[in-house]
Each structure stands twice: as C-alpha cells, then as structure tokens.
Length: 328
Image 1: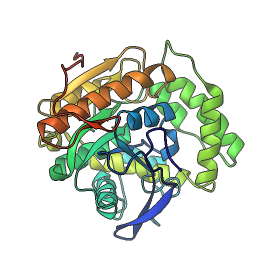
Image 2: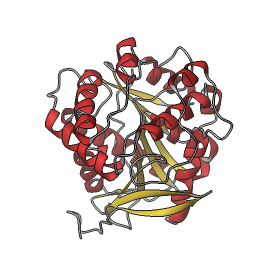
Image 3: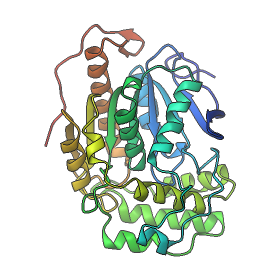
C-alpha cells in the first residue's frame, strides 16, 4: 500500500520493546525519510492523531510513526492492580507502579526495534511528558522535541480546572456506546473554542478505540495517571534537555492549564512557546494545518542545525528559511 508521496505504508503491528512489554505502532510515509514519532496522551491510542496532521507531515517529508503507549490500545498491559481514586489523591502507589521513565524507555525500545538512531519527537499531553523524559534522559536519540498541551509536573502548574476533575471521576463505561457518549461529552468540555466541534468524528474515534482495545482501558488509564503523579515535578530534569524544543499550547485548555505550557518553555533551555488562540485540549481541524507547518518548520531547522538529513516532499534541502514561529 502506497501513500501520496509514493512511499511505503505499514499496517499496525507490534514489537517487543524490552522488559516484557510490547508496543503496537503504525508507520506512514517513505522509509528513506527522517523518522518523526507522534506520542499520544492519557488513555489515548494512535488513532487519535488527526489524519490531516499525519498526512501533512508525510507530505512535508517525514516518516510518521504513531504508537499505542503501554496499557492502552493494542500494546501490552501490566498486571499491577489499578490504583483507586483515594490512592491517587493521597499519593500512595504500589512499589511496582511504573512512571513516565518506564514509558519513555518503552518508546526508546521501539526506536531500537525499528533500528532508528535518532528521531523527531512530537507528544501531546502525557505524550509530551514522555517525549520530554526521553529528551532529558536519552539526548542522543532526539533530533527535535515538540511538546503540545503538556506540562512539567509541578504541583500548582498546568492543573485541570475543577469542572474537568469532576468530569474525570465516576464509574468507567461498561460498553462501547457508553464509552463513546462519555468521550463526546468530555471532548466537548475540554475542546477548543471558536472552532467547529465535530461530535461525529469524536464518536467514531471512541468506538474505534473501544474495539482496538477489546473493551479494556479503565485500569490502564488509571495506571497511566498514577505514572504521571508518581513522576512528580520534572522541572529540574527538563533543564537538562539539549534538543531544540518547540512548546505548543492553546490559550483555552481546561485539562492542562496554559501555565503548563509556559512552565515547560521556561524549564527547557532555548525552548520557544507557540500559543494557539482558542485551542483547548484537542486538535480541531482548524489548527491542524498550522500544527503541521510549525512542527515541520521546527524539525527541519533542528535537522539542519545538527547536520541531519532534512527533506520536504522527497527533496533534500541544505538550509532552511527564516523562522516563522511566533513566540509569546
């Protein structure tokens, strides 16, 4: 199966990433193009990335790799019992509860399995935290970092609105129809303002996610949330990041307050902050073109600075143009 650029497109497959874990992934684009990983957020699967973003990055000359993080989708799950809400509130975790470091190591294991020495990392929300951790602990594997709608883990920074916390509670859905209904309501709450809300698309992705995971998910999401909390404030670690970093955040985000984006940019040396007016904790169709432009421009600049191959539509460029990113 070939994409528009004539490159090879792989179907979803799984690979052993070490320590008894396997990750499901999908690759779009030409195998000769620079690899770019898209790492999704809390409880999300590889199918949540808008195809406008995937196709746009492929057309800009990147081999786009999407993955299911551990404990969701078709990737491996751990046997540790899911923490109860009261345990999360009290900060009490089982010794075997994993952290963002373990999730980052999974992703590095995927790079190893795919024989990828260095890659561009693009993560949203928890995926941004995973990407940040890789960049801090494995700098030799990262060409560029783009952290979207994410934060540092500092206690009073980037926190969800109270209304969002309340919506995150409650019993998990028992069937695919209830799961889809809940997803539509949640995304309407945390989504962008000033952009059309496509409830049908959200509903379809939720049904697909339920089917991909075989109806499993609530325990994995709880363990992922515990991984975020157990990892604590990572600001000091973020200061060690040397990869060129772009931070993208909406100015209307009820899930990760915009203070999280500012704190991330402040913590990482040389990072640039790009603020999208009206964007919440989602990627509406109206911002996808800008996201592709910003990510591709940033990645191409970083590749040129590190003398890495930089391609656009299959053509190699020796240099890049003027920086068009706005900072705030």
